[in-house]
Image 1 (cartoon, rainbow, N blue to C red):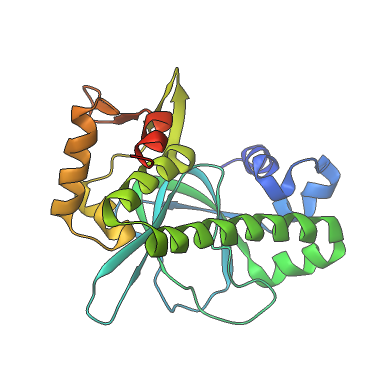
Image 2: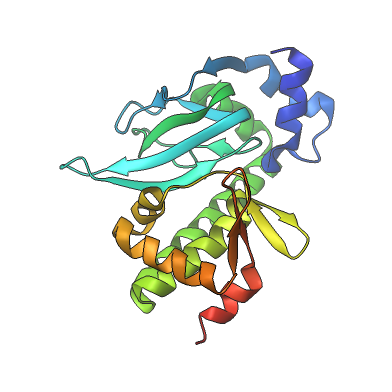
Length: 230
């Protein structure tokens, strides 16, 4: 990957937006690039946390496993996103697995060097904390969904959330840019594949969700929002 490609990608990341080329230069200087094929691991849960990644192209699945090997998908990240968000200004381990699900070009920056530059730019720390705050709000929303809603409602809320995180607006609907199996959707909220299948079929009959010829979901997010009140 060329240096100008690294600079262009980093400039589009939320915490780096509005930086001049001169302010961005120290980050570009310490950045490295890595190519990962499909199914490769970027890191595994409990590996020493020593790097931060920015997705130039491809998709990364972030998930946790318990002692029995059961998988819980946290998110599927797309180009322009940064991960992990945990670990700044402390020692620790990666809190989850990061697996490539679509061959990826990643920009890699060592956390220790990244932190040194952050300290020199207090405004970047503020932006980073805002991004972390958004992640905390998202996790709080997921927790509330589990506590306050039944399983069907949790599936509806998940589909709405995926419209925002993994969707593109096409007219009045969102097209999910990642194909999720019912098993993967189930693993995101801790339910069964059969339960998700029944819920998906139910909203399909109402035409709140359709699939195109390539198998991608097209979702009427507003209709699903109304579904929560019935």
